[in-house]
Length: 327
Ligand SMILES: C[S@@+](CC[C@H](N)C(=O)[O-])C[C@H]1O[C@@H](n2cnc3c(N)ncnc32)[C@H](O)[C@@H]1O
Image (cartoon, rainbow, N blue to C red; front, side, top):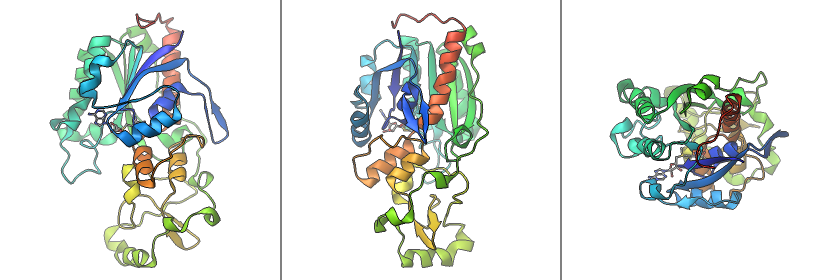
């Protein structure tokens, strides 16, 4: 019998792919977890289209506040709840943390936990959540999860320590209903091996002209470089800086990572961005570059999630977990 998973805010499915396993990345096989997704949804049509193109089960398009009653019984709830209002990148308008509607969406996860009582939940968000609302937002969120009946722990995980060529740091909050399972759980151990960016980018001769910045853009950036600390050309011998949903708008005057190779500046291609996020090459993004970049940049790296889910399943098995009534 498999663990039934519900996925909220599923986007194009980075977190979901990691929760399921059964994929290849950079010559490594990430074996299938004993899981199945029984409910998945997102409000973004284009992300849902990508999702539905890649999984056998379907993600439902809609606002979770209106779909909650359709959620079936499950064992594990997962969700990278929207982060815009917690992100330090998003200073304009200023961070509102839990005080705006988007920032309150984690309560949707809390409501599901109260109603369905799955054994475990996994929530993911940006590091800015720790400092949002003068550091008041995070304890409030943890408190809400605890009041729903969960023993909670949290950790900042850096994707580059898990075989992913990106220095992406994200907060994972994990909660168990069962104290023994909670005590058996530990966050995944970091790898020794670091994957440099050069392992996942394509050779310049295969890159379409449209990904290169114009001479005018380069000159403008060079003129302002000292003053503006812009032009974030990446060292390809190291993991890449964090890529975000803004990648579609990457310019030489933004903070988004770009490449400087053979004396030319360029953006990443969507496939390179997908690899930087640890999506397997057979995960399809049959859409415009803008939509693909948004979905990819928003995603939880599948390999990172795979590692987290692996330890969750170990913890449940270690304490001879007996599944709840979802079976
Ligand atoms: C950080 S992204 C999640 C990415 C996803 N976990 C992945 O790994 O690919 C947050 C998602 O929440 C979705 N979202 C925002 N508001 C929503 C709402 N009211 N109902 C459902 N989904 C919503 C966004 O469209 C976005 O895809």
